Image 1: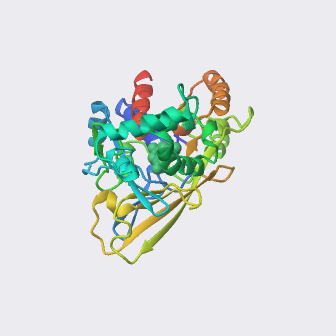
Image 2: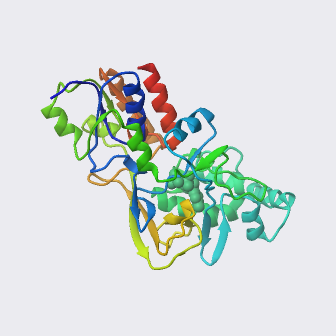
Image 3: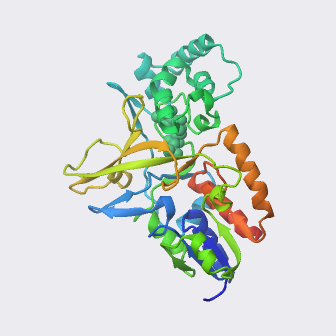
Length: 365
Ligand code: UDP
């Protein structure tokens, strides 16, 4: 078999950006992926003329103009702005936490009234320095917002008590005192017209690609295939879990085609109470203003990851971060192997951060 400069393990966003950058510098790359398709978790599949986000909804957003210009080379983006709706029992709220949410919750109108209500509830909670997600959420929005919109959703999504989760998870979400339902604070946002798979396809032009190829078997059979390896799989699996297994959350999707043109009127509806078993329902066509006669919806069920499942979210609590730090020490000693991406870096990365990290790593190479 041909020898390559780089073997890239994982045809997701990180691996594909690396492949594009390296082939652009005249390096030869072989990209392999265990799955039968490219694009990792941003893979989209067309169903009833609708781009279905098979591994969960991905909304591109960034404040980094360089990254925005970079992805725009590979696709045109539409003007989608993410504005999820939250359902709590028979109540319906706008997200993120903003004046629409607060006015609905407390029947108030002005930022002053909302701030006073929150300040009162924060004072009652007695928190001055938040040490975990629960305390962070209480000190940002008070008890009502926490109990109706955060506690149930977060505990379903992470399978852990909010007191045991790191505060940074909730800092991803804006709290604002304007009537603005844009879920993100970023300057640029949208969904690629034609779906994400096409972007990855373009990034991989110039590389050899083999899907349905498991790295660990492939390496046994082709130990001399490349000078260097870029590994974007699970870092603990790479080291055969020798320091113990890192924890991940997995997601199960129940996807249905419905014979209606509009099921829920929004791309993302979160179910924030504990008793509803799924966390959210995605109606994919609304990401692209679809006018198809039918619709496709996915209910998301969150669960702890175990061998044989797809890992989605690293659980970046203290225990797991400490274990990851030990794996990273091993990784640093692994000659000619670069670890990257959400799984290789055990990091709750957004897509723009993945691209940024890949561009930086490729630059160093
Ligand atoms: N979150 C919440 N209520 C919601 C939506 C999100 O409490 O209705 C919290 C929850 O802890 C979640 C975090 O905010 O894990 C981040 O949510 P995001 O929507 O950014 O997660 P992702 O889209 O990456 O799954």
